[in-house]
Image (cartoon, rainbow over all chains, first blue to last red; front, side):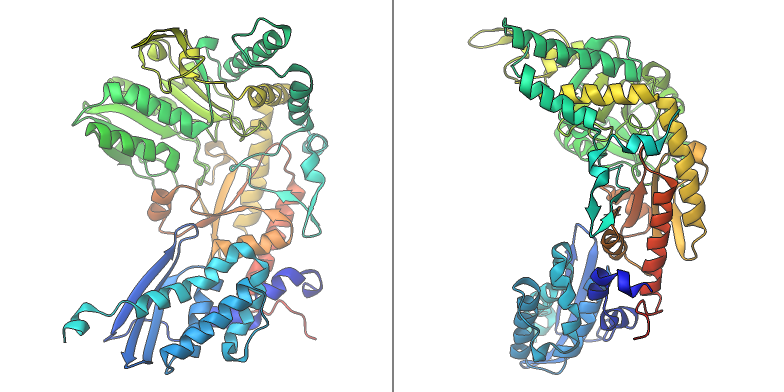
Length: 152
Length: 415
């Protein structure tokens, strides 16, 4: 009954997104991260922190935590699944495909995996920054090796 | 007799749809919609009266000046000000407060003095004082907020003392709806020899106000939150204060004689209205004040009390929904903030918008209060004269739809 009259938000709040929001993957902190960054959307108060353990060029472990809307938090969860145990180069390719889908109207690429569920966000310009926050923090964390590690 | 349904006919925008649904506008604490009487007064002004004011000899300038100055009298009537000369037009509440911080604050505060605020202030009643504190070495003190959304009056009594030079408080909270005991605080401020500024941005549109009864020294509010155009604010000051204050902005209109090295100032209130003012919008504000006077502020308050009681009742019955702020409608206005367990306000706002319902989600320019409430943000529905119980029903139904989406029950019917 409801679905017939709610096409707009049906398209945004797809089941995959809600499922990641309710049961996030890789949520928490790492014991021995090699890289770390945090980011904030001051307007809405969304917060994401990311810990990475890099093994050479490979993202050997990832954990995120924070708080915020379903879009920011579920993106972080889906992102962590897609890039775990993958080289940085792959993560960057996923990020490019994700941004192209949201901001340039590109068809979802196969490498997006579950992240494809966020395609509906492209129709809600004020919410796009929610979906990009996790990626922004990821890029920041890759540039931010922990000081202790660099001294080793 | 007050009829929201009848009032709605005067607001052209309320006939539009949003995402194919009738607009349900519940963001009145941010800004209100405008009746056609206000819109028409702007058109009439530009089509028949447009001229610069206060210095022309020609007919249009004389007419425009009369219309502009007449609005001062309407503002005085609204707030019970004894004189029109104590009313200054600014751009908005924020500018009114900044005017006091600069023109009164710079001359009256020095190192070791204290400014008492509260944790429920809007950023516009925090940041100007932070800047003043930085310029003068004065210190900010904050009255905390109790769990049920009231000012902690015991703390107010402790904080307001011999070091206090200024107390600046919101009359009605834009987040909690709380109506603060202004008279009581005025007593504390004056007993300590301090001045008292009342931020009336949320109260002037919704409550009968009498400045002398309130015990305020300064009162600030905005036209656009009470049916008027954007770009017009009001600062009222008690007798004698404005005349001893230095000008805020310098320029045309605010001077008497200009010489090479110095000038003398125009009479009050023009000393504080530098440059060509927002003539058309002030005149439009006059039409808004006429509209409110026609309804009567007690009737406006009564309608909002009723619709707020209805909203508190219906929203309060939803499981997992927490309302912030007082539950007694005699102690609060029509700004109703709420949180839904496990659901972020921006998700709520997006789903409500898809049903044509406009509410506000976020920190409401009150980050100190969000921290005190220990929430990142809230959702806020806020009412005005044209809102109906049917609209509250639409809000409640939409909130239930949000809960269906997020609480795991698939919102799609079986295919």
